[in-house]
Length: 500
Image (cartoon, rainbow, N blue to C red; front, side, top):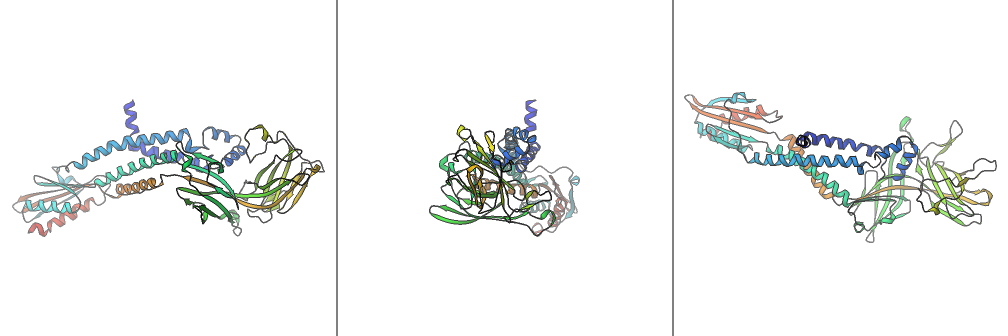
C-alpha cells in the first residue's frame, strides 16, 4: 500500500492536480481580507458577520498563506515534484545516450511513408540520407541497410526543465518567506514613516528574519489624490477611477519623489512598497473645561462602503474629571435620503459632516489589556445626553467647534486629511525567482513546440536501381510528421551529392 501510494504521489498527473489545488486554495486569500495585510479589516469583517466570521477564522481563511492546510498542499507538491522529476531526469539522461532504435521490418506501417526507386547505389543513398538527417538536427546511426534517426529530445528536456524550475520557484518562495518580512503602515498626509520595527502598525517577519536586514530609509506622504466617476449613470456612478499618492523617499540624505499607484509599487533597495488602501483622517482637537488641549491630531476612519462612509474612534484618557470616548461617522458628501436620514452620496469631500456620539467614564486603558484603536469599549462608559434627554450627537463641519455639556470642554474638527495604507515587503530572493521563472517559461515553450520524431531510411540495390523507403513516426502530437517523410524522399531522390 505504501509503495502504491508513493507511485501515485510521484506521478506527473498528481503533481498537476496538486498545483491546481494550490491555485484554488489561494482564491480565499484574494477574496477575503488577510490578517497579515489588514488586521483591522479582518476584525471588522468578523464583527459584521458574527455567524460565518468566527468559522472562517477557525479554519484559517483569514491567514490563508500561513495556514496548516495550505502548507500541507505546498509540501505535498514539493514531494511530488521531487519524486517525479528525479527518476524522469535519470531516464532521460540514459535515453539521450542511447542510439536511435533500429528500423522496423515493415516501414509501410508508419504514419509517414514514401517509397521510390532512384539511380546510384544503396551505399550512396544511405550516406546522403545520413548527412541530410544530421543537417536537420537528427541523431543518426546506421545499421545494415537502414539509417535510423531521432530528434526532439529537447521536448522532454523542456518538460523536465519546466518541472525543475517549478520546484525551484516553490523552494525559493519558501526561502523568501523564511528570511524576508512584510509590514503594514497607515500614513496620513504630511507624516513620515521611518523603516524601523517600532514604526510599523503590524509586522510579519520570517522565521530567520534579522532586524539588521531592515533597509535604512524614510518615506513621506506629501499628498493623496483619488478620483471617482461622477459623469456615468447606473452602476458606474461613483466608481473609483484613479488613486495616486505623491511620496518622497529619503535615503542617504537624498530625497526622491515618487508616484505610488495601485499595482505599481515603488522599490527601495530590496523592498517594495504597495498602495493597498486609503481613506479619510479627520484632524480632531479636544479641550477640557479650562480650555486645555487634551487631544489633538488626525484620526484614521475606516471606510464602510463604496461612498467612503467611514467609522472611527477617538479616545481621550487625559480628559478630566472623566475620560472621554467618541464614536464618529464621517460622511464625505452628506445629504438626506427619503427617510430624512443623513447619508453620504459620494466618496469625495463635497459636503463633509462628522457625526459623533460622546461617552464619559473609564476607557479601561489603565488595565494593561491591549485594545483596538478602531473600537471603543463602552462597558464602563456612559453616553452623554443632550438637553432633550436623548443621546447626544455632535454634527461638525471642517473648522467648526462644538461645546460639550456639563462643562466637559469642546470638540473641534480642524480639517480632514487623506491617509494611505501601505504594504511593505522585503524578499531577497527576487532575482533567483526571476531566473527560475524565465527558465520555467523557456522549458514550457520547448515542451509545447518541439516535436519528438523518429525517421528511417532503408535502401537496397535492385536491377532497376536503388529501392528506397522513407518512414517517419511522431511521439506525441506532430502534424508535420507525414510532410517530413515526403520532403526527405523528394530531397533524396534529387540529391546531387548522391549522384556524384
